[in-house]
Length: 624
Image (cartoon, rainbow, N blue to C red; front, side, top):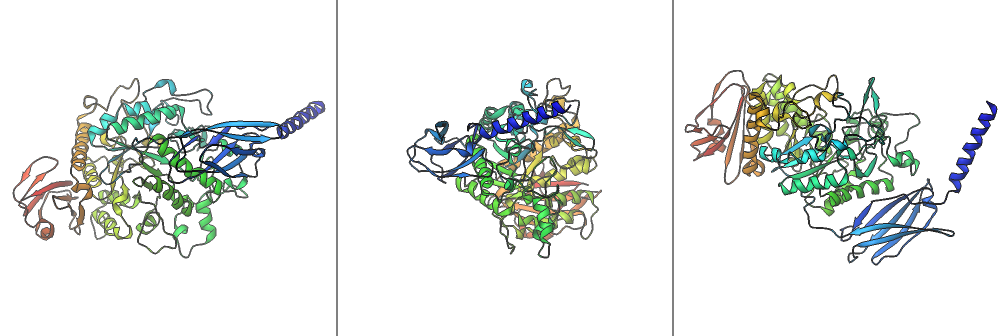
């Protein structure tokens, strides 16, 4: 046994000595390429490989200057600062690294920028469809699993494993989305998540959701890879649709290649012992708050298998910002949804947002800050409040309006409750520079499904969708809501992330086709389609002004109007029909004598009293 121990010790010592004496190699350069003609002439290359940081670097290419080569704690890294002159020609330069008699050459491509659409943004004229690629449609079963990945499983019978959905499958259903009135697609992240199964509550779960990146410059093979993503974006643009990319700056997966060999200790938020975020948002904006509480919120890890990135590290900050720009330029995506926005270093977020906006002035950025009040929500977007820190984020996910719409449908009407909750949330819009840039929703991949929350009441379902598609903001709908997919997160998130029926080989039902849907499902689908296409085709519904009136006795009325059209949205949340006296709405209804019911095409010739059936929202285009 002693002989074996000393033998192993000698072997370990030999390995260490070999490693220390190893000749330098360059195994990776990030970004993987760049472009000439970018507005920002500066670029920082991360060069990685055994002892890559011990090389002396040079670059000889017309218009490209190596300003400085940085070495860091880990000798396997070098960071090269370049400037690229405006007149630089596209081509392939050589990164030359020398050490003694050894010379290494690494090719790096500078491409010409093309004129394909990119960074177009999403606006209030759009209607976004949120889907999880793994659960939406499987167009290529050959890429469902790979034996050489950390999680080699794919099993649709297990709700926690990967199911095989991919970008090819999603591309096959763009016509379905366009026909429904959708104008943009937002996927949960498609970057490589080569993560092992994690044990959560005694259940082994895969990273099918996509939020644990392991390589920023690779689209996961299981959703199709880089070229499949480029092709999906091309197909979406050809269909007149936009693509939203889901970004994660706060953390990466435990299997990320740079976590396995950290460039430096400060690359991550380090604690003496593991420290989780408190998930409490109040310490960030609390003028009386303790700095220790604030640090735990921001620098604590989201979960143990998602290491928390330290964006105060300038090399990491550059890495993340350049990846964001590379993604837009390389794939042609149009908008940027930022995961766990509130947990990021906010000055870094401003810098990253501005870098994207400088290159793509029309791009829209909306982050996830899951808070329950307007003041805290406004902190993370452009606002009119005198906070010590001023965010430059153009938009954000409107969790406050989300909660208020659900409360309006679940609660009985009273002084503050019921539909008053919806009204009151909108009444505080003055805190935002532009509330129309907020993205609104009724559910998403992290919440209970909308239909289940409202007790599977189809009347309340129609009211909620009507509000979503007629109020201010950029509406977003979670996949399957249009066909009445349901369930609660308890006992697990998988319950609200089920496969879209018909998206996978062997499915007994195909809900992409009317023939595969029940009468109730077709009724819901046609309702969404009718309202979404009306919204899409009538600018008043997205650029028109919004005027709302105080709710009374369970009714709530608001108007969208511009110089060409006026649309009245009248809601009755009561259990019985009422006749709505419109006299108090004269400010907006003066001169109008008739109306067309947008959903039924029925004509109303008397607007003095409008019949509102129980639990109904009418959308009336007023006429003279």
